[in-house]
Length: 152
Image (cartoon, rainbow, N blue to C red; front, side, top):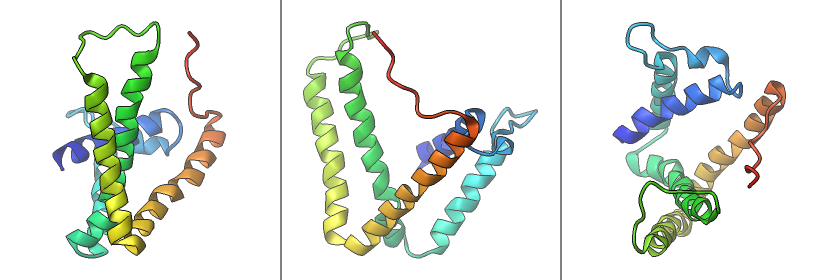
């Protein structure tokens, strides 16, 4: 939970800096150098989610969807390491197998939630997917879209 509390507001900060969220969300506290507005926004959103029900319902609706992105992030390692110009600082033996196990495990969590609690799981996916039109709106407004892959 600590990682989410620390990372979430920094995602809002980066989005505000990239022009895909209100600029005021990216305010940095003058003394503590923290994204204090984004932290408050995260606290409000978390409170709304907690208010909606039990921990089980919260997990089934929202938290498990993070595992989709964990799997995508890990799969990104495989894609990144395939690039000819990528030079990792260190090499790890059997990294492909370990990453594959993590991706499969992450997706197993997602599939399990979809099979055991389908209505709540779909609600969570709906919340995530509801962000796509918002992202597209903000991207067009800011004149940016997702960055194309770098040319090699």
